[in-house]
Length: 300
Image (cartoon, rainbow, N blue to C red; front, side):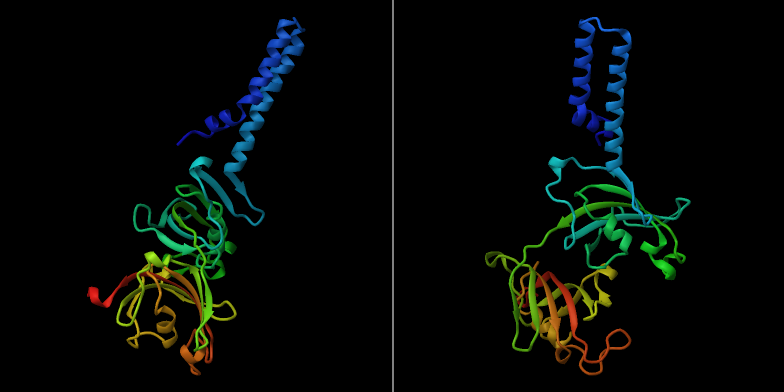
């Protein structure tokens, strides 16, 4: 990694050099020593300002207590896009307590995958991973109100309102190419959030084995379930009565790698009874789905 002071030197060299040229001109005209010293001081002030400005870009603290420090910056020419809402991120993370004791880490293991801006991670992490370049690494301090709140997280022994100390790295970034939107005869609304070109499409049909990633919300935005929280796809056979009827319909004719947003009416979901405790009766279901892998029936 190029040290920050080298980056600053390159970006602001012309300012300092200009000041020294002025000093040379003054010296050649035999100006008073005091004047020359003031110019030297001006050069030092300009350099110090440049260093401070660059350091401020690499580290900041928001009013609500979120602290971010970029410890592995990526040069602009190697960063064609920065993460934003809707991007799918692959993340390495290490979570520690205030004393530096590791709580959990997946560094150099399978990355954790989530969609930015969808509420799939804690609020502080959403913000910490926004505006990152692929390969970038940050240290992040997340206060309790932007972490697991007053409930904590028992499985990791995280107390209520506990401050979280993360090291995170953006391993990979996926940005979708939107496609079409339509409503089926059954009233299921389907929108292609990432389409696959027809000449590259491996299309699903009855009897195929589906490896699906999904996030499920209710109409009011209440989170219900996600395959990402288990870090494994949900696997089923298409049109084999293994999932709700609306999901079979929504995933028929879908390309491997395609992503869709799907709204399923209750008649093709969990009906009048719902599915206690999370899904009430007559609930419309809002899914974000990805056909991650497709094994066609004739491949088995």
